[in-house]
Image (tube, rainbow, N blue to C red; front, top):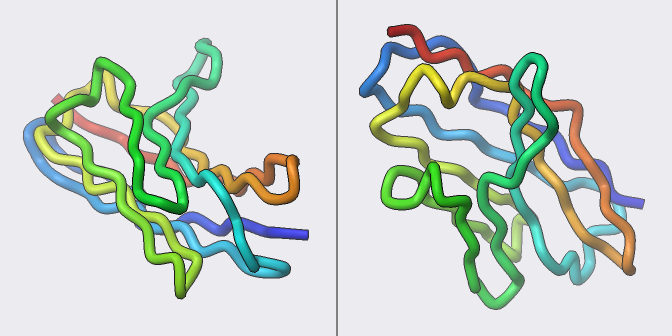
Length: 115
């Protein structure tokens, strides 16, 4: 089993930056795709960005050009560098790790962007 644990959320002013980190513990050998999702109050959880073990990335349109996803396969960590943050980026951000055909989710970290 795999347990992702997020860190790095917080309160930031619009235009600022934050970096989220996710460490995947447990049976981490050959975790495939890792990614970040977010859920704002009253909305469904949505994709932010994903990255494969080979570093192929996918970004949601609202974050393209502002967010960067990266990962460290040795440490089984994934990062999300968020720049030019907007109030609409406010949400709980969740880390997901795909392993043996199953998705494992973290508990989430709150990101709040003030205007």
